[in-house]
Image 1 (cartoon, one colour):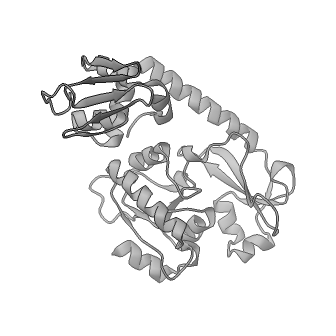
Image 2 (cartoon, rainbow, N blue to C red):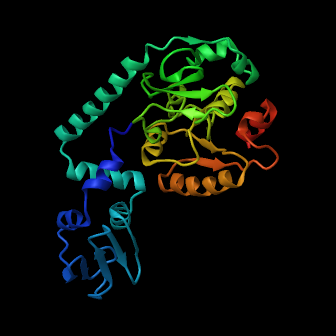
Length: 309
């Protein structure tokens, strides 16, 4: 299983200049923020084929290789997937002690949030939960319920746990109409670092046949519904996927079924997310919902056919 990997930190701190220095690539400066030379990827001899924009931190080969970010450069030069290229950059520019410290700092920050949010007392039997076909037993399984105090007052509080089964935040779903926002997250909580229900998904075990696929959906209640019917699922908590979420999926290493909402936004998001999952070399298939609006409205037979096909 892969170690800690901070994609955002790499994007903020690692420049094309640092990559070029690492690979001992020398280019000539043609403008204050531009470099040019022979392409170091396909080893061409055209001195004007390869350009680097220092301000945008991107490169472009005008003859064969195309362009992109620092990740694309390492992917093309070393013939790696996005995930492996990001790991390569991470290991090149951050020492083992630095990586361990950042990993520990990240864990400590999550632990503080966990300790704060464990104080919530929730009611598992509530009319709104019954309306969404969530029994008290199912609510207890997800540690969710109606909250009467604090920032989540008069909302269904849904905990988000990390892969180590620690609560990192609560999301509050309004139970009354015309209450905004419909979903309330704590201030400074970044959804892009987490996947709802990841704590219940076991990693792939080599040589174990017939391990169930994992559905990837948008929302909490879609995920809860699929789990209630006996399948594995995680929720993106939105219609986009981040590098951190892709890394979590990569570490679990299961077969995934991407099944977003059956609207125009869901269809467009499916295309974008599929491309990113393919870059990460994840094993998956996509399902477009045409006759229903959300996965929450699918029955067992439909899910079983989808998981089996």
